[in-house]
Image (cartoon, rainbow, N blue to C red; front, side, top):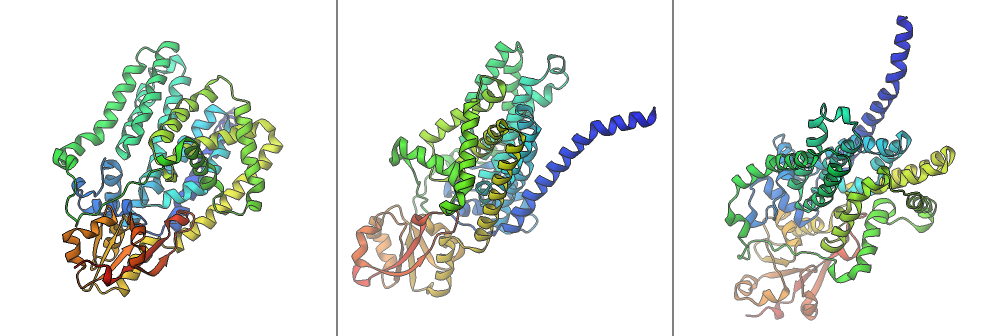
Length: 497
């Protein structure tokens, strides 16, 4: 009798134990692979602003810029207490979040489509080259993964929870998801838009599922999640910090990049590039990506073809479609980090589409995608670790070659990075090349070697007065050819007395 009970218990717990081992190994792989390939450099003005905020949080001087990213800066500051460099401290929150995200992703897909689909979605997630690179960057984008997927998992739990259990697990199902979404807003205010599908979803649950308290409980959880970071945040700043604008030339101007001029069709192309090309196959020869690309397109086609008005299809689209519209009309899609929350959803659709082909085809095609993703991910991450961003290359060259006493540099947003890595050089960021004619700047340039950077707006109007010094190529798999930086010197004859 005892032996029979023991055998029954082991047979019931073995699948649970296997899934836990799978998730544990997946999480360890994500964290270990990212720690081995992170380089700790600050590749952009945004990352420099975050690094400055670790030591002196000052919205007025754009360290960090509005809205302040309080949750991200708080978590990164924890790692600085252990003596870690700024670049590593800023990358670790995203790395850990990506590692933890495999758990809610697995449970979400398992409840929607089944265990095999869930395992494939996790494998695609942990090997996805786009998410791999984005989690290495000293930025907040990868940090959003865990709270976002946790929120989706908890919202799904509300729908599928049997009526006789809803009171026993009220805190877990009603509060955890909305609290995670409230915390997500402390990482970036862009996620405020997710409250719209959330409220529609909770209204549906209140009417259709006859759970009258679901709306009140969700709003309560959101308030708690917001207050966890908003109360200390607003007590630590002043209104003057928010409305202040830098007026001195000593404060770096950070130009805002935008894809608005591309139009709707151009934005849709950028969106597809962010999700498919950057996420899976960027900068890979066409003959290499032909087979996995065909598998990817086939899987998405099958997922759309078999879509029905059922929970497992309708649920993710409730959040997917509104967020896509938000990105297309209100966000800069030339920055792949803006689409990171959609990448796991695409993997869910891919795994669901392949599952319609039968087990043999499912395993064969899944292996093709996973092996391809892993190979490209390792290649990109290795190149990212050993390469240096063009802004950092330029700063290091100026630090070794330029005379800090007899030189001055004017640039666009790259000047922020140069100032961080070559602090001895007098560096100024300008909104436009026309500001060089201001009396203050003319005085600075007098009897100095004047360096100008190609990212300075309006520099093309000075071509006849410029002498190229050095070209700094873009970082592989992160920037495009347009992000190449050229350093010029301004001819002395062009400097007004």
